[in-house]
Amino acid sequence: MATLLSSVFVLVLFIIGLALFLHFVPLGLWISAIAAGVHVGIFTLIGMRLRRVPPAQIVMPLIKANKAGLNVNVNQLEAHFLAGGNVDRVIDALIAAHRAQIVLPFERAAAIDLAGRNVLEAVQMSVNPKVIETPFVSAVAKNGIELKVKARVTVRANIDRLVGGAGEATIIARVGEGIVTSVGSAADHKDVLENPDHISRTVLSKGLDAGTAFEILSIDIADVDVGRNIGAELMTDQAEAEKRVAQAKAEERRAMAVAKEQEMRAFTQEMQAKVVEAQADVPKALSVALREGRLGVMDYYNMNNILADTQMRETISKAGPAAQSVKPEDKK
Image (cartoon, rainbow, N blue to C red; front, side, top):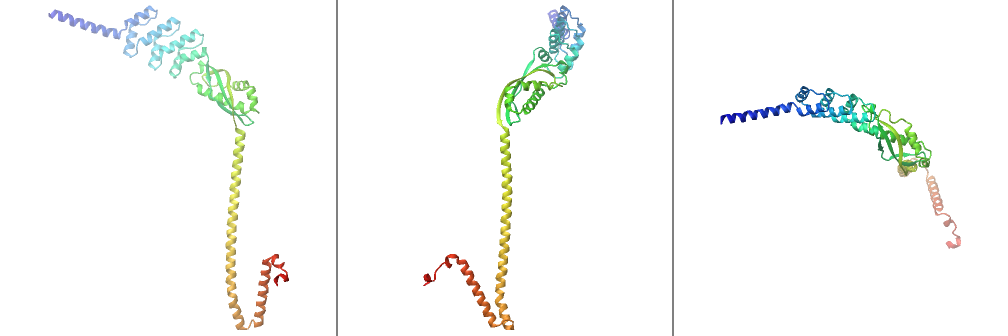
């Protein structure tokens, strides 16, 4: 019984030891690599385990690259993996570039991948160009008519400028700027509607792909719609603004006139008050003159006659022609 227990214990230890050995020594991958003609040392695979690098993510892309005729080694793939890159995608991109006869060294492909760009998609775009559709771009011709233009830009990835080159948003912005400039230089919007290819030629000749990760192959105008009459709207707004300015100035003049009128009215009331005050002093002055002998009685009566005659004349003048036209017979 003791012998049986010891045998089971030894068997369990052997199984555990074998499992640990197979975990640290991937014999399956080593045999697959040898069968594929790829020379990877067993100690190299053990070192990957110790460096926490999954050997399968290195050996399988290495086998794929070897079968495709690429010259890459384990150290390059492992260094790229440790840097945070996607080894399998880089190998696929290198194989696609090799088949398409595009010059793409491993270091450049790794740099593109580490820069955050999809290197495989870039190689595919170099072989099969991509079409970028811009949104409607609003532009105004010289006659004030708005045109809404949509364009389709055919681009091809530029492998040499993928690292540090601008993306699709820059291409769309530059094409939109070129459309606005081209339409704005047209004398009449009808010229643009008749020859939309003129926009394509003008925009394409500006070299809009400079400093970008793409090469523009063609720019095609997909749609042109007529929008608002911006010129007429601007003229209307200008006229409305001038009208408001004129109204403000007129209101200012009216306010000044009202203020002047109130000032004159206050001045007139002040003068009338002074006249009334002076008239109130006249009887006093007359009485003083009579007492002191500077004014005689006859002089006083003559002055009253003159005042009465003056008052009569004012009454007749205020009555008007109707009172003057009354005949003596009518009075009787």
